[in-house]
Image (tube, rainbow, N blue to C red; front, side, top):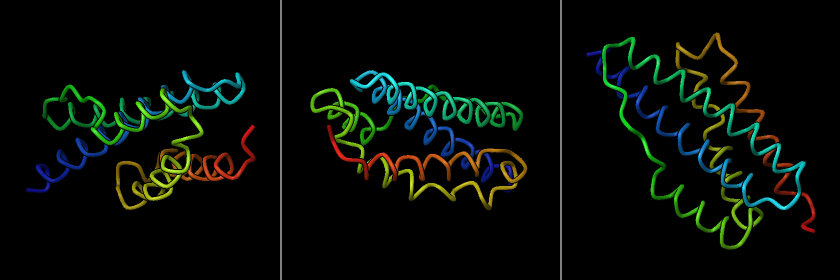
Length: 135
Protein backbone atom coordinates (compact mmCIF):
# COMPACT_ATOMS: atom_id res chain seq x y z
CA UNK A 1 0.00 0.00 0.00
CA UNK A 2 2.79 2.44 0.87
CA UNK A 3 4.49 1.79 -2.49
CA UNK A 4 1.25 2.62 -4.32
CA UNK A 5 0.90 5.85 -2.34
CA UNK A 6 4.55 6.71 -3.01
CA UNK A 7 4.16 6.12 -6.75
CA UNK A 8 1.08 8.35 -6.88
CA UNK A 9 2.92 11.06 -4.95
CA UNK A 10 5.92 10.77 -7.29
CA UNK A 11 3.61 11.15 -10.31
CA UNK A 12 1.91 14.18 -8.73
CA UNK A 13 5.28 15.74 -7.98
CA UNK A 14 6.44 15.03 -11.54
CA UNK A 15 3.33 16.68 -12.98
CA UNK A 16 3.81 19.79 -10.85
CA UNK A 17 7.44 20.12 -11.86
CA UNK A 18 6.61 19.66 -15.55
CA UNK A 19 3.96 22.38 -15.22
CA UNK A 20 6.38 24.84 -13.65
CA UNK A 21 9.26 24.06 -16.02
CA UNK A 22 7.02 24.61 -19.07
CA UNK A 23 5.60 27.80 -17.60
CA UNK A 24 9.03 29.25 -16.80
CA UNK A 25 10.28 28.40 -20.30
CA UNK A 26 7.30 30.29 -21.73
CA UNK A 27 7.96 33.26 -19.43
CA UNK A 28 11.59 33.27 -20.63
CA UNK A 29 10.48 33.17 -24.26
CA UNK A 30 8.05 36.07 -23.81
CA UNK A 31 10.19 38.27 -21.54
CA UNK A 32 11.59 41.34 -23.27
CA UNK A 33 14.38 41.97 -20.74
CA UNK A 34 17.26 39.53 -21.43
CA UNK A 35 18.40 39.41 -17.80
CA UNK A 36 14.93 38.50 -16.58
CA UNK A 37 14.50 35.95 -19.37
CA UNK A 38 17.73 34.32 -18.14
CA UNK A 39 16.29 34.14 -14.61
CA UNK A 40 13.19 32.37 -15.92
CA UNK A 41 15.40 29.94 -17.88
CA UNK A 42 17.32 29.09 -14.71
CA UNK A 43 14.05 28.52 -12.84
CA UNK A 44 12.89 26.23 -15.67
CA UNK A 45 16.16 24.27 -15.53
CA UNK A 46 15.83 23.71 -11.78
CA UNK A 47 12.20 22.60 -12.14
CA UNK A 48 13.20 20.24 -14.97
CA UNK A 49 15.91 18.76 -12.74
CA UNK A 50 13.27 18.21 -10.06
CA UNK A 51 11.01 16.52 -12.64
CA UNK A 52 13.89 14.27 -13.70
CA UNK A 53 14.43 13.33 -10.06
CA UNK A 54 10.79 12.29 -9.62
CA UNK A 55 10.84 10.34 -12.89
CA UNK A 56 13.90 8.49 -11.63
CA UNK A 57 12.06 7.69 -8.37
CA UNK A 58 9.10 6.34 -10.34
CA UNK A 59 11.37 4.07 -12.39
CA UNK A 60 13.13 2.87 -9.22
CA UNK A 61 9.74 2.06 -7.68
CA UNK A 62 9.00 -0.11 -10.71
CA UNK A 63 6.31 2.15 -12.06
CA UNK A 64 6.00 3.55 -15.55
CA UNK A 65 6.95 7.16 -16.12
CA UNK A 66 3.98 8.81 -17.79
CA UNK A 67 4.37 11.13 -20.74
CA UNK A 68 3.38 14.24 -18.84
CA UNK A 69 2.17 17.36 -20.58
CA UNK A 70 1.49 20.67 -18.87
CA UNK A 71 -1.92 20.83 -17.19
CA UNK A 72 -4.78 22.90 -18.59
CA UNK A 73 -4.09 25.59 -15.97
CA UNK A 74 -0.46 25.88 -17.03
CA UNK A 75 -1.43 25.89 -20.71
CA UNK A 76 -3.86 28.76 -20.06
CA UNK A 77 -1.17 30.70 -18.18
CA UNK A 78 1.32 30.02 -20.99
CA UNK A 79 -1.19 31.26 -23.56
CA UNK A 80 -1.81 34.43 -21.52
CA UNK A 81 1.93 35.05 -21.16
CA UNK A 82 2.43 34.71 -24.92
CA UNK A 83 -0.56 36.94 -25.64
CA UNK A 84 -0.13 39.63 -22.95
CA UNK A 85 3.46 39.23 -21.74
CA UNK A 86 5.16 37.55 -18.82
CA UNK A 87 4.16 40.26 -16.34
CA UNK A 88 0.47 39.56 -16.99
CA UNK A 89 0.67 36.13 -15.34
CA UNK A 90 3.43 36.79 -12.82
CA UNK A 91 1.06 37.40 -9.85
CA UNK A 92 -0.65 34.04 -10.46
CA UNK A 93 2.65 32.23 -10.95
CA UNK A 94 3.94 33.79 -7.73
CA UNK A 95 0.85 32.62 -5.85
CA UNK A 96 1.19 29.07 -7.22
CA UNK A 97 4.86 28.93 -6.23
CA UNK A 98 4.06 30.35 -2.78
CA UNK A 99 1.38 27.71 -2.23
CA UNK A 100 3.78 24.93 -3.22
CA UNK A 101 6.90 26.23 -1.51
CA UNK A 102 6.68 23.75 1.35
CA UNK A 103 5.31 20.78 -0.57
CA UNK A 104 8.54 18.81 -0.24
CA UNK A 105 9.27 19.52 3.43
CA UNK A 106 7.46 16.42 4.69
CA UNK A 107 8.47 14.10 1.88
CA UNK A 108 11.29 11.81 2.98
CA UNK A 109 12.79 11.57 -0.51
CA UNK A 110 13.40 15.29 -0.71
CA UNK A 111 14.30 15.99 2.90
CA UNK A 112 18.06 15.62 2.30
CA UNK A 113 18.08 17.31 -1.09
CA UNK A 114 18.16 20.91 -2.21
CA UNK A 115 14.59 20.73 -3.54
CA UNK A 116 12.77 22.25 -0.53
CA UNK A 117 15.21 25.17 -0.32
CA UNK A 118 15.07 25.71 -4.07
CA UNK A 119 11.28 25.81 -4.05
CA UNK A 120 11.26 28.35 -1.21
CA UNK A 121 13.86 30.40 -3.07
CA UNK A 122 11.66 30.39 -6.18
CA UNK A 123 8.72 31.65 -4.13
CA UNK A 124 10.81 34.49 -2.66
CA UNK A 125 12.22 35.44 -6.06
CA UNK A 126 8.81 35.51 -7.72
CA UNK A 127 7.38 37.56 -4.86
CA UNK A 128 10.10 40.13 -5.45
CA UNK A 129 9.56 40.12 -9.20
CA UNK A 130 5.80 40.56 -8.77
CA UNK A 131 6.42 43.60 -6.52
CA UNK A 132 8.77 45.39 -8.89
CA UNK A 133 7.47 48.34 -10.88
CA UNK A 134 6.38 47.46 -14.43
CA UNK A 135 8.35 49.10 -17.20
